[in-house]
Length: 120
Image (cartoon, rainbow, N blue to C red):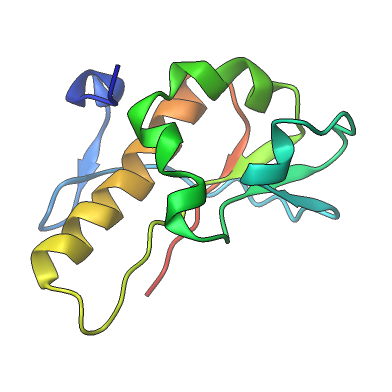
């Protein structure tokens, strides 16, 4: 099941493009692990990040429930970072920003400690 608008049910929306609002936790992680390594890892005393190629984490958008219980084992997650390029059409930049925030909101709503990844 692909991520749907229902993942943001009851979200507060903010700004011109009405992205889901997620607050900053104020936490500074000491140890990080990329999402593509987190599925097979057994050391959960770290934070998962998405500073990897989009193709290596597109699956969380398409099947988020498949990864929820795994991500809950970790100390937390820095929210996804779907790419934004200067030469990317604005509509795609808006879409990827929405996806970053929507997945972050959904994780937080489902009990995963998060640090929002806010870019520019």
